[in-house]
Amino acid sequence: MKIKVAIALWSALVTTVTAVTAAPPAQGAAQAIPSVSSTRGVRALALDGKVHTLGAGARPFALVFLDTTCPIANRYVPRLNELLAIARELDVELDGVISDPSVTSVAAREHRAEYELALTVLFNASGNLAQRLGPTHVPEAFVVDVEDRLVYRGRIDDHYESVGKLKTTFSQQEGDDWPQWRGPGRDGTWSEEGVLASFPEDGPKVRWRTKIASGYTGPTVADGRVYVMDRSEEPSEIERVLCFDWKTGASVWSHTYDCVYEKVRYEAGPRCAVLVEDGRAYSLGSMGHLFCFDAAKGDVLWSHALNEAYGIRMPIWGIAASPLLEDGLLIVPVSGAEGAYLVAFDAKTGEERWKAFDDRGNYAAPIVVTQAGQRVVVCWTGDRILGVAPKTGKLLWEHPFAASKMPLGVATPVMHGDELFVTGFYDGCVLLRLAQDELAVEEVWRRKGQNERSTDGLHSIISTPLILGEHIYGVDSYGELRCLKLADGSRVWEDRTAVPRARWANIHFVQNGETTWMFNERGELVIARLSPEGFEEKDRVKLIEPTLAQLNQREGVCWAHPAFAYRHVFLRNDEELVCVDLTEK
Image 1: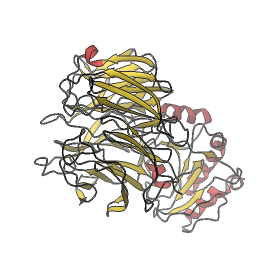
Image 2: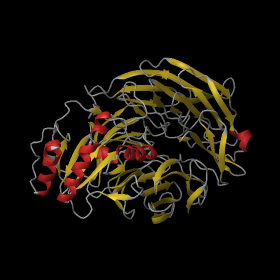
Image 3: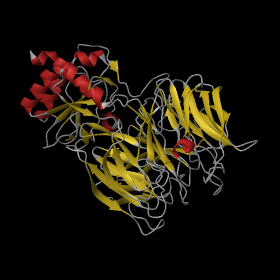
Image 4: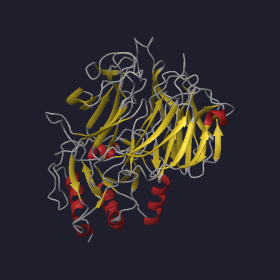
């Protein structure tokens, strides 16, 4: 009876155990099966807060991608529970995976309890398992043998001809949105399919260009609209929040406010990305002007002049760390005096909910991770790395990583499994391990060179690194593209062709499946594959010109982070905002 209710996945499990390496003739398999899964040994957090290592003990394992809102996936819970019993008899690991970044761990746990799902469920909001395996729907099953070969991919059984679509972002209009700093999961991951593998001979199609003024703010895209900020000094000093139609580049709305820069160097304009969620758009300017808008109309719903309210101890590059939303709170790195480094506001009303810490200001955007079954805000200040309770601002843990010269941490902390990587221009890098049975942290390794020219590990400034498998990829202080071993930070290779060598030379990384999209400061978009074997450049095209307002050196730069949405890329310099079609023809 058990065999009949789930013949496709069941036969794959049996095939794996009996060491048949070819894929079983399963009814659900619709795609070619890659020879290597690259998932064995990957660590991921389970909903119980424990770190789970795939294939531990040299066992075969199976993963089933699930979604809390898909009715078909939910109907399969009884069959999955039956399959779990079979898998245990066969000594095969069987786990569920939720990789939707819009689903919180609390919601995922409630869903598991409500449907009485017996499987261990991996809460994979970073999407690294989805990137490696490439699920196209839910539920979809993958079976990996003891040699890390993917021997089955497909449906659980043949009871449904159609399946629910895998949800990968907060909202969908024409495709996937890019609604905040570094994308839907705040982790530089782009999940859309059907995009170019190489560029046409005459280059990709430019959908539109529209004029804007200077600024470092990278565009964000949500619900069919593109958001960006800029600055002008004539006839008076102002900052603007701009909203455009994604298809045409036509202006939808704009908001202008007076903003005189005081004690701020590099005066091109605002730094923080506009954050869009639940019909609201949140902007934060270089001097601390915080606004909440109606995202569609541009009406101001609430605002704060943070410099006046909290006495900002202004970092030399101004306010640059993009706020985040968590559980109805907008958490803002204010760099204020008297215990106001971080301030949390009610996202709907703007009322202050809590403030905390007296640390020196820094520029790195905070992230939210799951640790020991709890949500934790990770924030890198000018003095230390903090783990903070998002609802209360309570300090959960801290680790020293103080700036030796001046705070110059711009790269966002990167979470990988239970490990956290942080890197800065002057002070090198550190890898921390977050305990999963308690709210604690320990240092795994730290590397720092003699100076900014003679570096060890990775001394990044603007660029946020990638962690793929057991390796770190990032840009060093003078533009050197490096690969490090995650285990100890030792260098595997270095490349100097991705971007010309220069102080603070930059590349922004965005991962799409096995492809790394790299936007360098010369305005070039590079399609590449990064591996321990080296930097494999597949194609490169120049899409936008460097400009001088952001940096009056080397004929200008393009330092703003791009947005990838609706199978297009959105780029800006100090003169224009550009939309380029990346759809596979």
